[in-house]
Image 1 (cartoon, each protein chain N blue to C red):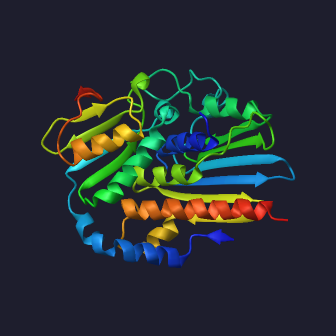
Image 2 (image 1 turned 120 degrees about the horizontal axis):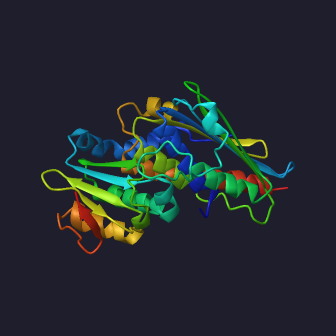
Length: 122
Length: 185
């Protein structure tokens, strides 16, 4: 029977041990990927996977990612909402993996809102 | 949807929206019976039987953001396209089980797609929800239980991006191994 082995887990644990202490702090940024039927059909899973890769590289402990449902704007899916503490939430529309990478690098890490991809301020 | 794994992602999100905190996902590929079976069970609040009679009707939905619910009706369409069926078992307070069967070799059956991405997307997007994923090909099984992993990891968070990255790779290679076992004589 194929199974995720305890050894695998230990390896992962060793790799993440040095970062772990950083990840317990409060989160200053929340990234919401909208994953209703409409979002999933439009490619939200690819967006989420690109986001995970970027997060793994960024080594920032204060960013939280959540999936949520449809927000009623199905024609502009995949939508992603970025909430940086102290500024208005920005909803991005028609996202894909590359746009997600750009938004993460510029908006989340550097604070530059990518107005070209934005749908609205909330 | 292009892949069955996207349908799975969608139906599981339904289960989470129904208040479940543990979701069981089972995929069974049986070449002898020429069948692919996907079962998704949650321990959420379930739904009344009257709603069930019309699951294929997209205008029956409990959502409030729009008036059309497509998740289950799309899954039913995908199954019926390849001589399959969808069965839903539910009662208020008892959770819901959705079982979809597909004729494995049917030309219109959508590919299963990237199950690893579906599972890890669920894990990272829904901290606090547990997932039990079991994939059987020809009697061989791959099994992942986030409750067990959480117990092993102790202080480590499962939604840590590096953990997720390794988890994705691990699921991908295990499933690949399962498939290659099947093809071996």
